[in-house]
Length: 359
Image (tube, rainbow, N blue to C red):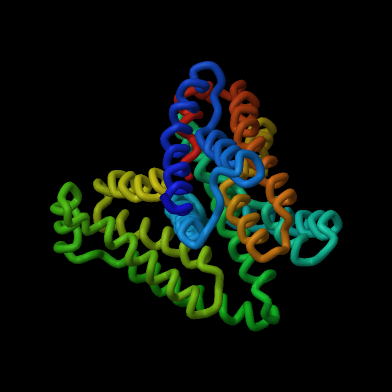
């Protein structure tokens, strides 16, 4: 068997084994699925057992998985809850965190590029981890849930923009112009997505949802390909295109097939995951917001992967950042729930935590 074939089998074996371990351990200790996936990956990788090694095929699948990860991060954002004064506060809070993160990263990293990778990774938020926790705790649709949604959205979108501006290798003015062009294209796509869809569009989604046609799923990947193509043509990181595609796809499907949207998302997630502080909150809520906003892992993995590929981060640096992200996913949501329990938020069952890592 070829090296690629054996490595692929090992990866898929991990994909099957990790949920079994999460289920078994989760009956006693709630541990997100991603923790087992990462630990098993380290175990079979070159640094431990050396059973699996990267090559062209595995690297290609890795990039595809990374793209799907960022696409689904964009899809999670609900525009209705991310606007107004709450959004402005979220943006300024993230900018302040970015300034602190960059300063810390450059001081600790010993260089500009390495410091940027570290600093930007420190400002990311794992919205896909936080939202299911809030949903199962009954706090997603209240004021607190809306604020966390806004801060989480900025914590996912902001690092991608920062990477495009600070690590493009171009002058800041040129990068800003190219980002402006991409923003205009995205805005035009959003405007198109918000327009009412013709009746046939909704009918064909409903008619093919349970057939081999799967129009909605194919449409999702067409939008993803178009936005990836636009970002590549402008010399921007493909992660920016993937994130924008997620935003646009949610708007289109919410307007055209609101009743089918959750099922379509499940199908897309099956492809992606199966294979590849505002003052109007009280003290406990502000503490919970800090903890939820500090929960980070998916973008940390994405950013450190790029940093290692660009030879700006060492494998040890990347491992340390990912390890810190794993700790945040394990600890911070549970601490936030406990902190807010006195305000009436119900405890999170272990089943919810096991399924909370939706990346």
